[in-house]
Image (cartoon, rainbow, N blue to C red):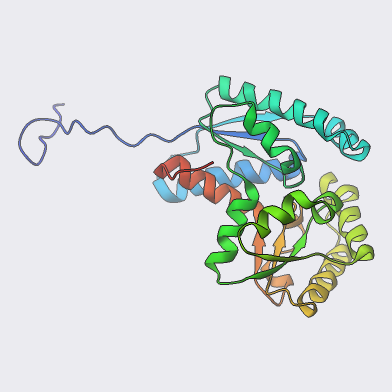
Amino acid sequence: MPHPPSPAGHGPDPTPAPRQRVVGMLGGMSWESTAEYYRLANELVRERLGGLHSARLVLASVDFAEIERLQVAGEWDRAGQVLAGEAARLQAAGAELLVLCTNTMHRVADQVQAAVDVPLLHLADATAAAVQAAGLSTVGLLGTAFTMEQAFYRDRLAGHGLRVLVPDAADRAEVHRVVYDELCLGVVRPESREEYRQVIGRLVDAGAQGVVLGCTEIELLVGAEDSPVPVFPTTRLHVEAAITAALEGVPVG
């Protein structure tokens, strides 16, 4: 069947159809949250393009037990080497944009970015943009103890002009325990949801205008209905930013 003429009557429209950029997902930390990344990416592409469209992805899934041992031992450089190697393999497999599917391991984001020539879309930047779009300036941060207590994540948010509050020591320990002992294993307990609600309430009492769910597994446990202030689900925000970049060519990196 011949192509329909262009509006100018000069034959087929020579403009090629937009092509999705291939998103490389560096995941497995844990696979529970990486599965959410994969699901959300495909759902968003289907919503935006319709029909049978799905996301163009390549995925590297590491053994989380190895990474967790390095976290506990404080061997962040070694963990960064592992993830940098995986990132290079994703680029070799055709990735044009990378997402590191974990908040905590953004501790080594610079090391990962240095290993590739394609942009790494930083999770905290996507989160900060959403907080700013909501008109908020002070947020509470929930995450692993590494994310809440070390400077790498809080400073990245603060670099966008945000004030970041974290729970007290006892609450940080409980939030961390639930992530590693329950959520990373696919266990979702109503009692833990109630604990998180109370932690959120104390952050709000301390001045938080919103709460960053700064661990990809936390979204398996709590959401907007569990907080008196807006929550910022980092997994969804990260995937939304990646798919927007993949489909619309928004500058990243």
